[in-house]
Image (cartoon, rainbow, N blue to C red; front, side, top):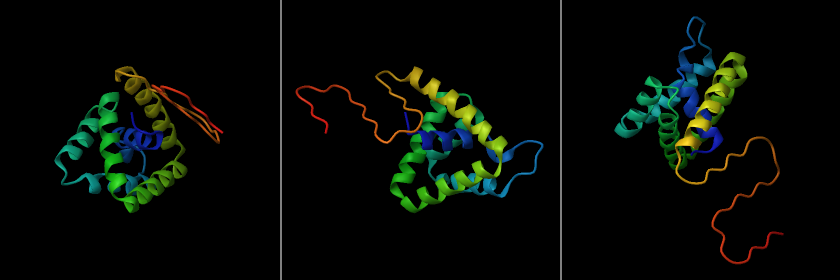
Length: 144
C-alpha cells in the first residue's frame, strides 16, 4: 500500500475529481489533473493504471496500482513531486467539495487495499511526532 499522500492523489485522480460534474472546474483542480495526465503520458503501464483507476474509481486495487505508479514517478522526479503535491493541496484548499470527495475515496481505498494485501499492513492516521512500525524483529531492540 502506498503512503497516504500518494493514495490521496491517486484516489482524487481516479475519482474523476478533475471534472466535478455540474460545477465550474476550479483552476487548482485543472492544474492537478493536468499534471497527473501529462506526467504519466507516454508511459504505457502508468497510463494504463490511470485509465483503469478512472474507469473503476471504487476499485481499491486499481487505486493502489495508480498510487504505485505515481510514487515511482514522484521518487524519480522530486520537482514533479513538489509541483504535484502543491497542485493537490491547492485543489483541496480551493474546493471543500473536492476535499470531501478525496477524503471519501481515500477511506474506501485504504480499506480495500488493506483487505487485498497478503501480509501485515499498518495504517497510521492522524498527527504524531514519532511513529514506529516494525515487523519480524529478531534479537534485541533498543529505542532511545
